[in-house]
Image (cartoon, rainbow, N blue to C red):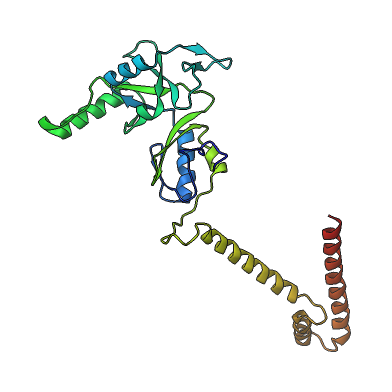
Length: 268
């Protein structure tokens, strides 16, 4: 995963236990793939941010909006890997853009599709908190990453290190990251041990089946010779000549396949 979009200093490492991708809970390797597919099919989402927090971040990072050649909007000119251009709006006004710190925006914020989602969540928190509860910011805004071409911002939560922020196509980690359902209980056990044992068992079963199939070929010195003899005794009388012809043909066929395989191996 180090060469993928989820690698890097705070990216995924061998042994990390992934629990959440975006808003989807991961309960196994199969669910990891399902969550990425769901995130790819889901409409782009934003994150709730208080109006006061947005204004504070705007003072720290004034936005300078321009459009790329592909039509997407960019407002972070410093090329920072920690900042991202977000869009937001007040009620039905035109979209505005701000260059914000991604980790400060996400923090523990919840996903949203509009400002109404943030204000509804704030009202619910206030009702649950009662008079002494912290409630929430009734003027919270939904800030959405200004990304295009199917690119998404995903928060990948994994233990024991801080969560990873991934910017890219949601399905790309599906092909660059390998997941396992097994977690070693002891530190001296390798995390690669279960897939190694699984692969070994698959090869063992395949090899045993192949050897059993080859052994049943009507050929001299193989069990197929006696299987053929027993079958011919049941259906034919004076079967010796027929058995000899079949055994010669089976032996020639098996020898030809072996020679062809060796020739292909040497020449190839």
